[in-house]
Length: 282
Image (tube, rainbow, N blue to C red):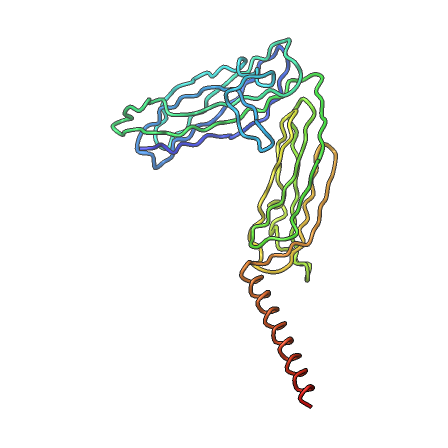
């Protein structure tokens, strides 16, 4: 049996001062429909990202994840009954000589059964979940973000419409970019998306000294037509807006249009040839 446990929060941002200790918690939940106690294990690993698509790296140590050596888990193992929760405390003892800037780690929660038995139920392949720590050590922090690209396509065969952006963080701390999306009917101006203003705003966290290619899909759109898509990005005090008319046209409709035009051209050509033959006959 697989225990579908959950953890909260999935990530947290913490302010750290050199020479001081920070106390925080993660909460592990064993769901009400679980048929066994959940024996948990919490471990700490470094966190960084690789490439512009932000592939997570939980193994490579560098100057931005030295925090793994500062973190202590108060109860790294324990048992949670069905429909139970456990607040696991962790502390971060920031060294007095810690360099200012971002520090990142992952608190990993998994089964502590090693393929054994759990109250008579076999536990197999219990998945692992992570709660990410985004720490900022106070001091000489640098914010330096740029919006490199803000792209909206001009055509799509079928919804959803995919919008993209490229964000660069040249500072030494993480920053959050706010992306606001809006879609209106090109002919009437009626708002199609979002139905709720809050649904159209998204936060994208950009790690220091990285470039991030981010994309988002906008669904629940007409299957055919023309819409106006507006993407506005706010990042490090800068604003970039791209607005474009997007044609939504399925392949079958394009084929139908081409065939119709071809048939119309063939009809006109045939009529012209017939007319010329009649003129020669007279």
